[in-house]
Image (cartoon, rainbow, N blue to C red; front, side, top):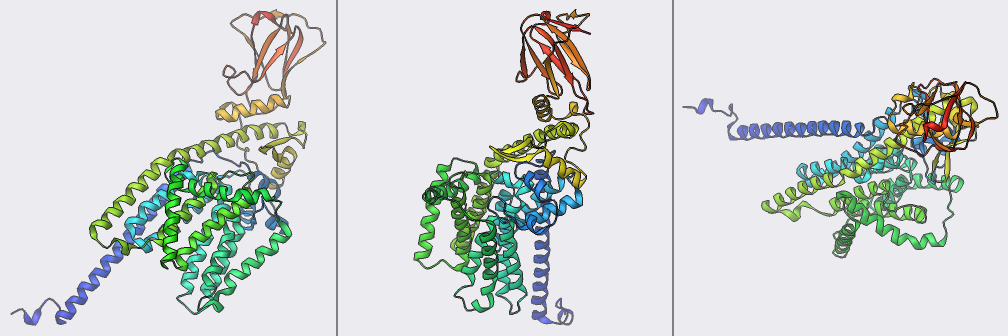
Length: 558
């Protein structure tokens, strides 16, 4: 009775199967869209969290060199090397931001660092997803996004170049794989551009030339792709001959093996925030597994691409930094962690887990290990957050004093250093903010309400430059009155001075913005005699306070 109006709408069993197939495809698309929506929400939340860890940050370390030397678009500003790195990409970005936003909006650099890191993470996680599925890629992606071991890169705007080398390599790798699917030159051209951007970001990108050469040479399509790596390679070689070079001694060559071994093992340890001895065991196992793949001829060009990239990175870093760098440095561990996880992902196939029970155990194991990685390395993320905040607040305190007393400061005065190396002079700083028309501390009005570290740094530079001081004098004072014990200090307003007489040796402790009772580093021993406490005029607020170890030995005079 239902034959004439069956549910396949007249198409019989074929129509029913097609309808079911269509519904399944629709459900699959909706499921995929929902998953990508979840990726977007997770990325946004993680990005907000990471961005919050850099609140109140400003320029630090190497950024001061870009601050003073790379504020105008010029050939020299773009191509000159920075610590041996070709830095065209970050130089262009910094100059553009300086010209667009000035020096006052460091938030742009903070945001850019987080965005670049999340892009690296998304590209790496998506590559893992393509090989192993969402269940494995998602927890690994979250662990990479919150990787405390690489916090120096993630939380420092200057490291957009260092991370950019890896970012553009991953883009080049994907563009190359798309090139194999088409016969036109569009994707090969994008591959070459991405390699150029990788190399132009920092030394981390040099390995992309080697990897692309390895992927394209001695392949059936090498005539289509040979230029993808050769052109960037020639360009980098020309730059290196003109602007770089190396003064490494033989001893640096000898130190390379130990440096590479420590970097690789520390990279594994950094994933979980554990001692590097466990990383050594893991690296040993990975090396043994890699040898097995090569000997059994299961290794392909694709599986070897990432190991070549990270191994060359370690070797190049060791060659340039073995005698003065730290193989455990967070910025190196960042590249190592991505390199190791992607190397493992490319060499392991899901066909090894054909049984349902085994596959579930692997997925559960990945989730647990990823959770342990986030938990174990979180302290490192907080550590780098605290480090950059402390350095930033110190700079704010110092530069506020420099700007307020710019006419009284020698232009050759060193303001910021990296170890013993000066990176910011007072004259260069003042010339830069005058040229751009803004400064990192232009919104600081009264230091008395600034963070603790900023007030401490301001007092240190104020007293060391003599803008606030106690000096002996030969002048005769009159109407001198002893201080009651309950008023064991004197206060000097900006632009003012206070005369006093010391009748016996006392210790004077001085502070303007910082807590007078918390520290004695600005102590000054005063012998009996006449003194003047003075404070040069400025608009930073607060008064100079001088506290004495014995109030009965001090008399305030007119």
